[in-house]
Length: 144
Image (cartoon, rainbow, N blue to C red; front, top):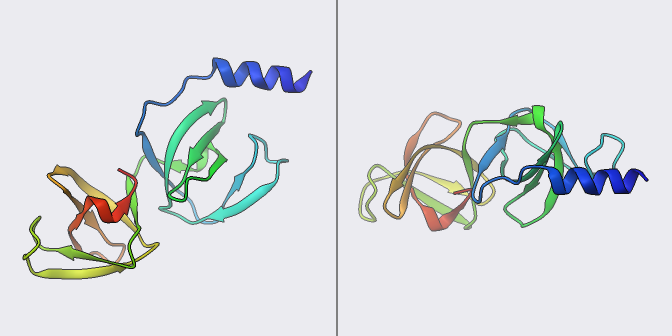
């Protein structure tokens, strides 16, 4: 009976529009295999971890991460802050959205960066938690 109710809620829940991204807003947020705090916690996500919204059911949100894993997280743990995660071993972040612009810093694979500006051609303006900002190639990050 509970499964039928859950399936009904899941089908009736509004699906997120394609490409709606958010980030984890708190430290050490458990990511579950079902929309319940009694479900199995699959891993713990850190603050600024980017996720793609798949569906929302009551106080829970089903999300996809950079690895393609689908998990559930409590809606209250999500932030509107847009972030990306570096996919390549080392991403160059430059002063301008140009390949030959001076290097500001390099970000290692797995590092989360806050999105400052989208739509700069194949570039995205980002901010590192240390305060440095610059432009990274969009194909070197996930969360756009």
